[in-house]
Image (cartoon, rainbow, N blue to C red):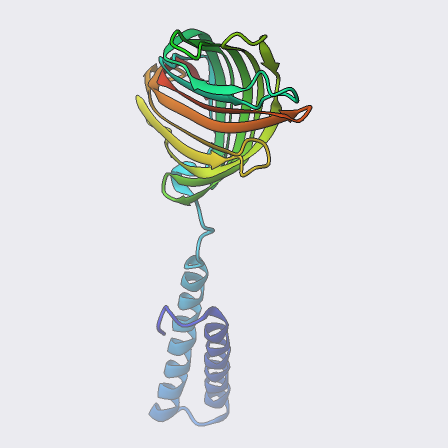
Length: 289
C-alpha cells in the first residue's frame, strides 16, 4: 500500500483485508483441502500480515508540530551602562511674540555644547515576538553669538518601549511609545529668559533587524517614525550597533544613533516651536541570558 495513503483509508483497507483473510480461513475449513483452497488461504493470510505491518509505519509518519528552530528559547540582553555621545546637536527655535508684540523671534544655534547623556536598555525575545526598552537622560545646549543673540539650555529625559513581531528571519515590525520630558531655558536677544517644560507621549512604528544568539557577535538595527501630531508633530530615530561577546554572558556594544523631532507647545497664546536633532556614537556593556 502506498505510504502516502491517508491513515483513515489505510485503516479501512486493513479491516477489509483482515476480513478477507478470515473468510479465506473459514472457507478452507468447510471445503475439501485441495490446492485451490490452500492458495486462497495463503493469499488471505499474506494480505492480512502485510496490512498489519503497514499500519504502524503510518502512525510513525505523523507530521511533527511546527517549530521556530533557533528562536524557540528565550533570549535576553540587559545593558546597565549604555552611553550616548551626541556630538552633532542642532536646535532651531521660534518663539511667538506676546500680546504686546515683544519677546518673539527665531534662531538656530551655531556653537553647541554637550553636558552628558546616559542610556540604559534591555531586550527579550522568544519565537516570533520580542520587546525592547531603553531610557535616556541628556543635557545639552548651544549659543548663537551673532545677532540675534540666542542661548539655549536643554534637558531631555525619555523612556522608549516597543513590541515587535518577526516578519521574516531577523526582520521585525515594531510599535510602541516614547515618553519625552523636556526643559528649555531660552535667552533670545535682550528679552527675558523664556522657559518651557513640555512633556509628551509619542506613538512610534518602524522596522528592526536583530541577529541574536551568536556565540561572539550580535547585530541590532532599528528605524522608527512617530509623533503624528499626538505628542510631537513628527519624530524620526534610528540606531545600528554590534555586540561583541568575549564571554558567554558578557559583552560590549558600540554603534551610532540619531534622534530628530519637531515640537510645538502653546502656553498663554504664545507658541514655542523647536526643531531638534541629536546624533553621535554610543557604547556600553551588556549581560546576555
